[in-house]
Image 1: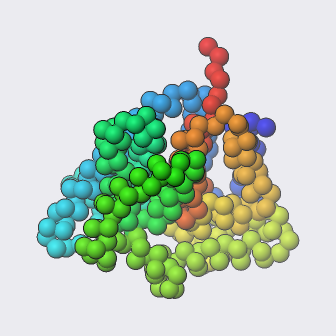
Image 2: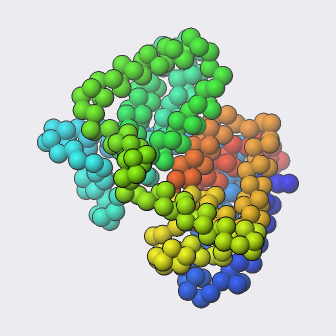
Length: 328
């Protein structure tokens, strides 16, 4: 079955749940991304997937912008000896006055840059073009370093998994050369100040039970909601039932895992339909390797942050990963 058709079935299942949801729950639903942005992204990116080569260049340039701001900001922070956790690099640059921390957003862009840079590094290493290999290794190394600095654990995990998938067939010799070159950049950073590696510190806090993001609590509560009885196992607790279940009835509380959110609110049936979207795309034997790697990066990232309203971020790469033949 077609990927887009699977998503339409998913929307029908979502609408059925909306019909039975209470007024307070419906008021918390942002219909724009779910019914319009997610749908439009999946449809148009499938139809225009032949433009992926141009899109990769745009994504690379956007990642370079994020990397440039990161370099500028952390340099100023280190110079002033005021590196204490994550800092909103755009706020420091005077470009963001929202007062919010978008470190996950920065981390995802840096993960995208890291994977695309690795893609070009692999191409030019095989072509034995040392100059271009070194050129693309610079954004790769800097993006990896800042992923360790930002504290964006979800983006870091997604980036590493996407990178492993991309380079799974790379020869040992090429992998050894790349690893050695990367180590030259990373080792001085680790030796300079281990406390500056906020991502590593936050991973340690997670396993030590002192994590302030409450991810373990959120995941556990989603499982508890889903496993209440046979009805919730099959059909879920209903749209926006999760924040009510945990006693935090506001927009900021959701499982922070798209699969657990769908499981606990739409049930095992909803999750089965949702998996159909990915299965129909990944079973295509002509999948683009780079875009598939980026898709895996986004899926892993949104297994630790974001929800159904953010699906367009995954659908963008998922749709572009499929090599669709378009008749003119």
